[in-house]
Image (cartoon, rainbow, N blue to C red; front, side, top):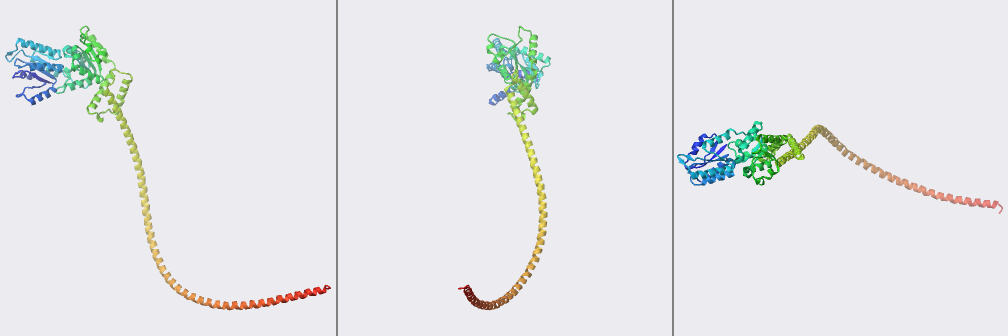
Length: 474
């Protein structure tokens, strides 16, 4: 918790009077020399403050502080605190000035800010917000209200819910020290199951209340409007979401206890649905804030549970429906789980394939090893056989040399025998020629004799024929 100490400077000592009474952090904008660097420092410090105090004393100069108070109460209505000290450090405001300051205080309250009478009240208020502050991871309710009209009702609801054992987020008690109040409000809404919107003229026209309501709509919160103060024409200014919902009446004409009982009954309905919406939303926002990194997606078991909740809510048209962010987050988680399963399955196939390949490779290696050993054995045997063969070749070469010598000698002897045979054949041919001539002479003589015999035979056949003819009587 941190407060900006704005207001009268001009060597006024009200800050020195207040600071020792504070138990919260603060920023003092007073510097020896006001320049551009001091201006930027003040702007940055305001972004880190939860409350903006503007205390005016009779030492004020000009009307800039007046304008600053009005501006801050308009833009930061729930965080602006106004105080003026009519008499301080021996000086007093005039009656005219006091009238203007009272008008200014009324304007601050009208805008939703807080108007306190003195520094003691300021210190007590700021210290109480620090002492009563509670920061939880989950709340049953977030209370959105306009300070001007509904601060008391909001505090009563906060106390009643706490008595029922139901944690509540309310800005007065739940913005931690040193944290951007806008971020804290957003966290409060996202961590709450129910969003209570107290309807009043201030809340309907408040920029902050409208932004809170739109965040609740965006994140799918169950919105429960509580009508506190209604004025003519106000309904037309309401947000369309508030107009279409049923309202719980807790106004001047209806007792608080009865309205609170009705509020409890509404919030007890379908608690599992709104609780799951908050649970998954917290994880979805964490994922979204991380740049939607896959490491922030749901686990496999969480995805199954979240998908079941989401599908059931859509199918049964649960109210409120799941937020868009929850839907995207759960679907992305489911897709990532499916992809992971496919990768694991592919990896299993790959491992199995590698195992099979390794087995085949092992078998091939064993076969190769055995074959290599066999080849080595055969090589050794072949080398032995080669050595034996070399020995045989040497013997054969020796025998061939002997055979060659024998062949040479045999060829000499054969040549001599051939010449002798040729001579004998020539002599035999001469002898044969003599025999042929003798045979020819004998054949010739035989032919002559054969001719003579044939001639004699014909003469004898003729004589015989004549004899037979004569004997027949002729």
